[in-house]
Length: 445
Image 1 (tube, one colour):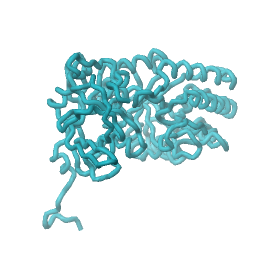
Image 2 (image 1 turned 135 degrees about the vertical axis):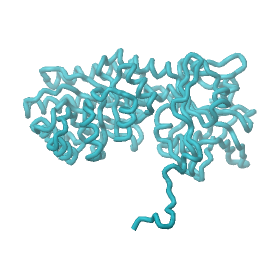
Image 3 (image 1 turned 180 degrees about the vertical axis):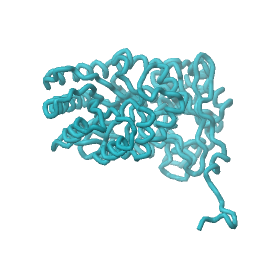
Image 4 (image 1 turned 90 degrees about the vertical axis):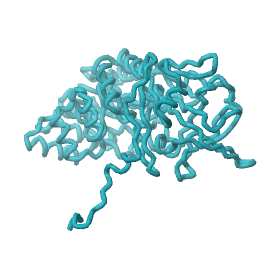
């Protein structure tokens, strides 16, 4: 693509003025970079809220849980609460953030394929709404904790339906060769459900599955619905227990580049609801279970973008031009991990054509530290320019690290011309806060 950046990749409040300067949420992106520094994660709060509301319109109260692994901080947990969604957390750390934000525990869903006894202890003690059981070992731990006097939890049994999601193998979680859940084939999932139903230490709430992430093929969700509904009928027949909830997880893909054509939330919702209704009828379920979905990327991803400042432009004659910026794989590891592809534009000249092909690289000591390979950029790109990568609201900040001892960026929410810092930028001193040097006489024996 050589034309201006496709505004469809940006949050809905994005505007480009006559001078070519881009703004989001009424805030000039170049000014945000100058004010808060770079790299900088910028989220359009109105986009976040609008996407939450659209999901609620389709799935109803209690039918949507935001997948916190996509992006979670105190402000995001508070926003999800205000919009009336459930919140799924996958570790004790995510649970701690949710509770720290005052999120109602009974609207939390706890995930994780290897929950520790302490994580389960905190969750049961706090009164989380659902625990998604992932193994028989975990059921042993829950029973032990209840035996100690902790409350009996409502439990969803996570199943692997054996469905191909046609996405990257690292984020395809519904196939049988997966670290997650109990396989439907061979009767393992049915055995797990039977144990939850029969144990006095667990209340059987239903079934959960998740086929993968960044999924474009929505028929894969329909296939998963059929498998899980069939299992629900088998559980009802084998145990007599009703299956109150069928949770299909998340995974809806988003557009990262011009030309990407994922399903809209409406298209996804219509197909999933239709498929679940058909599957339940075909399976002969006497009561139709509540359908729950867990979107993360499709809420947070399009609402965010990352700002970087150009520090070096290096031409390798006859091979490639590298444009190095002040971030990289420590704030967005997806290109290095999954081969993810993005677009980029200069925020002060967003209306400019982009005929120059160059690779935007990070500042880390890795040849694979590339943010955008073969990016389309303006001819007059220069040192000091601020470039933005759209659609980085999911799995950017969430997966950020301190590789090469680079402090993690700040996060700002923008709305109606006001920018507020929701996560402060790490300082160099923050990099030392966990370290210690033993002084003579203090060394442990």
